[in-house]
Length: 282
Image (cartoon, rainbow, N blue to C red):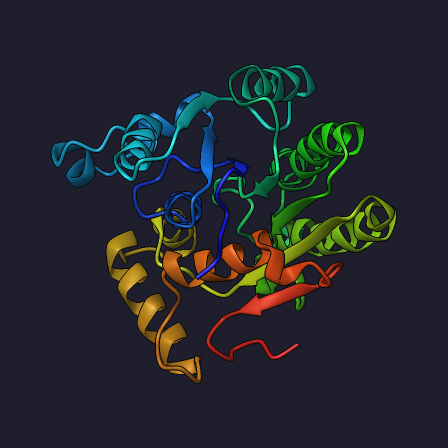
């Protein structure tokens, strides 16, 4: 549908078998783009047992899938909240591919101690969410946009925010704060980058059926209920509230990312687009 032939995309947080990052990476490869995928080293320990038994190896598996589609790929471990690691990630990408046309800021903090009422929210847990979701988006965007401006020729920056960046949710205060911040950051950077023909937009998914839901359920499950039981209940309850009748899959987000990465979106910037089956209509 979209022609991304000759483009190079950099996607953070892309090592999960069921994750948004992998779905976007594969979709952009299908559209013709070469793809660099990144994740933190600890992501390897978060692989589900059944996925590991099936041979899933995180970033290495994503790279193999992209290459099997006939595209070039590179997998890099990088902590997006560390400026030196971000600089190294961008440098290695440019060393191999010579340019970056598309950036997808998908890396996100792992749900856990932050999913509590504000009166119980520890500073360290709050700071960790902002470190990854806000600081990480800022550092990677700054590094890649600097290259795009210096190179000329425009570019596409896509930030993954959330429906929780448009409305507050109890026990999600740290996460909501970070995703509201991503939307504000997106709008400000879109204003600044427009003169360079660099589009900056955000995608705001609802609940997506990924590994992150496992961690959310584990953090929110009441005493006496397993994370698996709570996950199943949460998915059913959320699906009931979605007008389209289901929660999102990674491919739903990837379709929007492909549009925003393409020339079809050249006159679209500064938007935060809900992809939530109608659960968010703003």
